[in-house]
Length: 471
Ligand SMILES: Nc1ncnc2c1ncn2[C@@H]1O[C@H](COP(=O)(O)OP(=O)(O)OP(=O)(O)O)[C@@H](O)[C@H]1O
Ligand SMILES: [Mg+2]
Image (tube, rainbow, N blue to C red; front, side, top):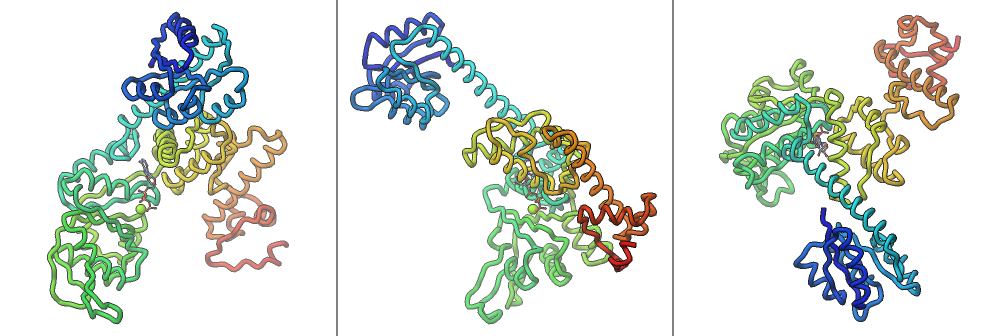
């Protein structure tokens, strides 16, 4: 903490008077007789506090305040003002002054303001320090995590980055597959060359081929000049193929050839070009299904999957959630200048009990929204909105605090009914009769709940006839 104050006033008596009070309280003092002089001093010496007069010839205190807040935003500025300029003082507050003191001032007034300012400064410093500690301790190339499985992921990332073997990164959507791919690239010798990602599921076959392998002039109508493919553009770097599970069989064989031979054939030619690219691929869990049904070639799978990194879903590492929340808020503060917000332990509990089907990306969205809509310094339950309300079960009943008891109970019952009935219907493929049997209730009773809450029934084999349902 910095117990040093710069006193800026064109009146020497005020400078001396103020310094007597401050020095008695172990605050070191510096002096400036004008705003310009103050700025000159601040360039060379750090002061945690600045006391400045408002009315000064040439550059006034308000202007000085604005410059200080812009260049040294952490410096606390307290303005001193005569009775005549209270309005300017208010303006100063909205420009970021910590407080204003009117002349003639009383010792106590100065002391109280001083202690409070120093205390808050200490808190801010501590928060910044703690945040930096979290980042140092639990972060690995932008990846946050302290969960044992995540530490294993970090370890694997470190190991594979030293080689050029293909790596297959697996994990549900939003678990950080692309972030892991980037970490591998930026930890490797290839970091000075490019990292390029391509979502292979987003492009039809021919476009994908043109994009990756390139096109020779005249290959098809409209190909009026040579175009380099990504394999060539990324030479020496890393190519990240995302969502490989849905690549067509034809394209799979072409990619396999490229990997086996280390060369590609642009569209419209038969001349191969040799390439030097490290391949990282990502797939979600549907790849298993594609392998089983032979929609995905096994030989290509083994080529890409020399090493597999599996990122666990967020719900299996809930102790990472507080760290991630802190990190994500910090990121918003840094990137978008949003004021920092605190998250209460009760809200954290709710966040830790939600199953996060969209993983870290969903958490990111929920936090982003909460930070924006929250009023005041804290994020409260009201600010947290989950995409899937079905998951807000009675277990996270914190959500209901603040509602009158009867309403809360009704809401809890509704959520329970929705959750229970949707899940039991899922297990019977939408068959209401079977679901009712399994639940030990009558078909009519189950139907009533379905209708009451407009639960969507996904039917697999059976066409429900609504007129019979009501019987
Ligand atoms: N461990 C983590 N630490 C910090 N941020 C993370 C972490 N994991 C994911 N994120 C963030 O969550 C978001 C989603 O991550 P990313 O795009 O890498 O996921 P993905 O698995 O590729 O998702 P998808 O399957 O939808 O493509 C990104 O904004 C990323 O920065
Ligand atoms: Mg991705």
